[in-house]
Image (cartoon, rainbow, N blue to C red; front, side, top):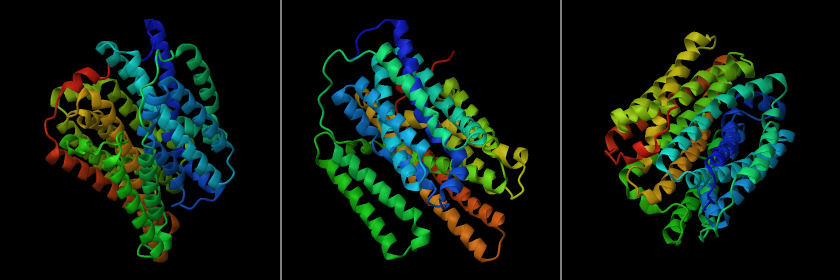
Length: 480
């Protein structure tokens, strides 16, 4: 438990926690606009390039829940500081990387540090602000910073890559990390007593992360090795065996990383499936549309950052209270279905974009639709994921759905990038020009992403029950 501190110091601590988590959020978007530059400099193929994103997402998602358990055992403040140090040093390694292996390895370490920071920051905020009104306001600030981080990331990534080079999208984390660490020592209170004793489900975290990494590797390399080849089938079988081992581990350990009983709750299970499908579509859109804008339309990194900005600003506006207002008026199911359908429509719009597309006609409408859809649906899917669980399990439910988002994004990106590459190769073999072939591959990925989003909308409409509405009032972002 955190020692009692005065109100002003609590809000200073909140700002520091938000700054630390902002650094983590930046790295989920800042990289996208620099991907073509990284590809050209380090010689990545189009399919292997996804590992620059997936190495981060897989370790982040795999260790998100374990990071929270480590905080319970060793103290949230101590783990927050450790996560900041780990993330900052990994950012330095990324910034100095001169090979594919070093960059991918450092990105994996970044994801591990990011998982610890993100998991512990939320626990610290909950402990700092115990009064419902103050907690709602604090969560509103936290949510706004997280949404705004996406906007800052795409713009800052474009500016740094355009003015300097891609290495600086990682090196910019160094002064932020140092400042956050120093300020935490001064303003973030230490725990008042021993941390809660808990067993660590390391086996669960390792097996689920290894399973997903092997599956993603098999999918990414499926085009080159052959989908029915022995290596591909063997890797997929290994991934399935590791996941079965993870399920068996969770069923027998006393303190499982993911208690399987939580998935007997219909709304929780549905929300996690929806989260996987949605993130598969959204992460692939960020990744593939950045390539489309730069490699097909010839945009500079700065222009790509500005192109993404409307969607991120819309999502930020919804996080400040628009989404909570909609949920209070219509419940969770209708906004979730509507949001997913808007995301699907935005992806279809990108699937129709031509080789000589114009921003105002062929890009901006899709960007706005995706921003609206994500802004409307994000709060409802989190509320649905926690609507049927006891208050004591709300943190677990939130961690599970966030893990589903990261893992769905990693697997979806691997699948859609592989489909795009396969379609591009087929078009090249048939005699199409390089830009036409690239665009044709991207179109396939956007269409499949739209199918994922539409499937999420259908599942939400058919399977979601009414749930409990209490979390809406208590956890809704505050308006200012």
